[in-house]
Length: 87
Image (cartoon, rainbow, N blue to C red):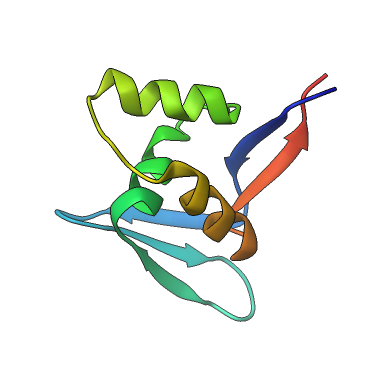
C-alpha cells in the first residue's frame, strides 16, 4: 500500500508573516487565505514534499506540537496542498 506524498499546490504564491502565512491562488478567482497555527506549520514544513510521517518528523525536530492531521485535511480541502501517490 502506498502512502501519499504531500506538496504545495503549484498555483499558489505565499508570504510568511510574523504569526501567519498568507497564501494567494494565482488565476482568475484570486482567492487569498491566512494560515495560522498547525496549518501554517504544515505549509512551512512542505518546503520539500513529504509523507505524513515526514511532516510529523519535521514538527518533532522543531519541538512543535500541533494537530497536523487536521491541518493536512484542511489544506487538502482548500486545494492548497495536493497529495500524490508514493511509488
